[in-house]
Picture (cartoon, rainbow, N blue to C red):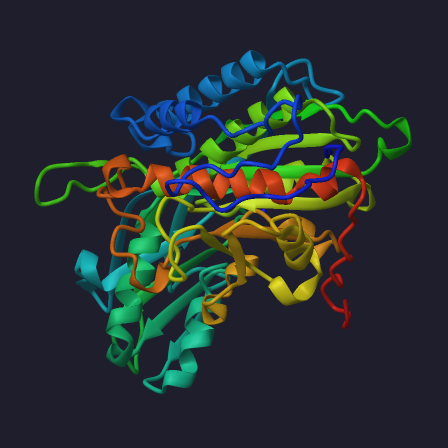
Length: 450
């Protein structure tokens, strides 16, 4: 879903005061430990999730507005651009395709729009049964074991006409919804198409099918800032703090008429944490390792921002990644807790918890392993390359009724608890930032062990 860290070990933390801030015992005459700014958390959170940002949709004006706001925050804090960049915006190109009108005539009878779904990378599709090279014809039977074949055809590798048994009507409807949406991919879509028809294949078949697709390249941007490390010998031991700033943008209006999916928890909360942590570590200014702070684009449409970012770094030079995803509500474990995905894949979690000794805050293993969250966020790309890259979250995702809805707004969040979570992340990262802790690597995909 990638350069960093800070010096100085955490001494001892007291219990959380009034749900919000951790404090450190200090000797007489010593300044109090740096704290995450609750004012920054509130301001950034409310800005990113405001209607002015129009849901921060990928490739939409609100997404660009959010990127520019975040670049301004990194400049305000005093971060430096990632080496090789002239500013905080890391631009990259993706390709967007928008489906046009599709028509299908089988055996002389026009099909209803609800009976046809087209997934195509071709600008124009025009098939007839009289073509010199007719398309492949596939039949999906009623058995549930056929679902895998049905879904696999969403990524066409040849021109294929698919007849779908009505036993799969619900799944066909989901595929039709997917086919009707604009799509973004890292490369220009290929020339092949899949046409789904709901119903049995006629014994005698003639067809005439046409469709169009509009494709264009669009420029997206991650927002990346660096706090250089103070120890030159650790210059290749980067620590990354990340969250994704994109969301769904403008969507189908709700019953109340709201069409802006503000994405407060998903993931303005994680992006706010990245800004607040950058400010925190800049104030401390004692990190031995370099710290990279990044707000990713295009997580919601395939994780393309984090994939591009990961390719700009040598994974062997990334010590760890803190990816922060949906921390605006209390976790199922209660206040002052959060969970870490892939907890058993490295000793990242136990190392973080060791730095919170004496506080009330706890990091727990992911309580929702069936959701496969470890590979569903922006940590996944670096994790697959062996980096101890984990996501930190509090969301009770199996029961979160506001997820991906227009009701995911700031008013649904607990900003006080969220600030406490960010403070805990900051304090838990002290050993990694100082170079005194190094988590074990994650076994790259295709291998076993840690």
